[in-house]
Length: 263
Length: 205
Image (cartoon, rainbow over all chains, first blue to last red; front, side, top):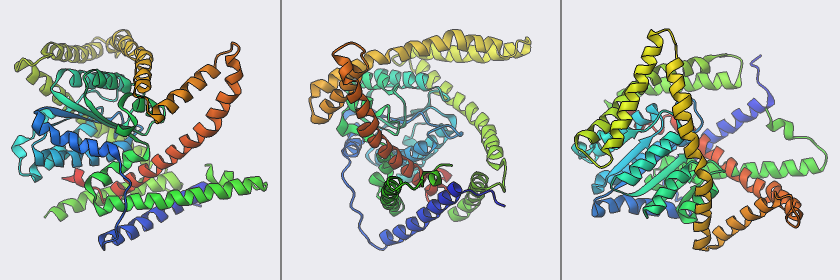
């Protein structure tokens, strides 16, 4: 009657399980349960880069990647990037650092501008926020966007570049300029074809890979709501590993359970 | 007061999320997600106007303060106005999008293709840099890339590497790739759910 198939039921069960586990872990963390996070070296560098802008008098460029909020691919990366931007601007507002944020989507630009000005308001430095430091470069034109970012980091007083989000191989255009100018880089992507290029250009210790892009806000702000979602992901990952093992055993024994997982 | 200010947007978020989930998983709300997508497109049109003002503000301020690269800003503002005027002229003259399409096809596309073609050289440059660093990870990365590249060559003795390169891509690489994708998908679900549940609501001010 509802048009539900096995795949839909399975997806709903996973979503409900996710929500239940999420609130359970959130309440545990609020009550003092400690979460051990493995160190992410790129984020140490990110903090240092923002704090050093005060000493150097230069700015840090921050990009949310090529994703957008109008149904394009990369919406989740942009949302996670906005959380990361919020934490970065919080540090910048406190330490009188300066961030140039660039976007490839007008809706993202509005939100990025709003979040940045909010962080300066909270730090009591609302007059120090410059609206021209949150810039729309293009509207969903990946190559033109990267060309615009390249122009910013090569012409302006920038000491480092942060690109975290969904971004394709065109990243190399910026990576090359950053290397030639000896700029610090922190990069991260969910695009598997870009990962080796980022590692080759920025180095493994400065590159966030896949899920680390989504984990970044939790590492930076340490809020219980973000830490709980990391814990939930870990539990679900464990369940997926068990499901894969069951699938392997079932397939070896001649049972076809794969159809359950394919819509 | 802030709580009341948050209440209405959060209700809208919950309702929209419920509609989209029902549309995705059941037959109850056919087309609801498409309708909401259309509304977002309308908002996007206004956001684009604000975006244009943002672009003009940044570049006009660079022009007036005579910063380095102000000439590029002049070209950018001039090109933006030219394309807008071309679009309006095309509509008025009954050419529809003919003029702006011509600019896109014969000016913009060749420029982006030229930039994209640079990537091949930049990849080699990045590979050389990785090789110079000489860490275990970068050496493994380059070794793997070299193996797959040589495995594609039809000439002897490299063609012997063909099977090894295919095995390398089908098993170790595909396994790692799927692991990364599953991890990223879980991260995307977690981030989206935090927004849908209203836990991350900084964008509400």
